[in-house]
Image (cartoon, helix red, strand yellow):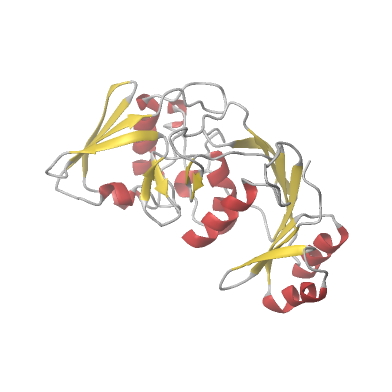
Length: 286
């Protein structure tokens, strides 16, 4: 699942058409099997949900392209020799979609909520306490040594996403969809479509040369991405063929063969163990 998430995030952070210098602007329509049941990151585990969530929310650390833990909202993490104390220094100036600056109070509230509502709360069972000694630092104290604790926090499933502190007491699936990611939620009509829009206040990690899995310097070139929920595989294929979709997801291998006879360059695919995603590449970059 992790490999699929990394692949799909990369697809939406760069234009579909080949270009020496990517240009900002334009939109993308994605015909997908179904819509998410929730966009609450702390309780989300399905691919349908996570495909969207990882564009909206970020964590202290995340999985890079080599499946290692890499800082995202954290600038660095200092680990005591006994592997029981982990001190995270936050990146400066990171904003929520509301424009509010992220502080350690938001991180503390998010971890406390995660421990209360997430099905993955057991991952924090060895935590003795959390601390937010000042706005820029967040500290985790463990009951016993765990040298791989930071790796626990990189999970792309039930992600340890940072939410505004005022969401702390919200029940599972009840949070406001406000994160720090390169896209913000535009519109969500259940059983129909969902739109995410580029967040122009996004503060990318300037220390990284470019995107790296779920980490690195992430740049959203598209103005928006529209997910259309299309249950029938044949209808998704037809949408791509007629130009009603730029990308289609979960295409069974037997239907993907329809594109093999198309002119070279008319489309390109990304294949997983179970299905194929196909993207039109004939549309000019705006």
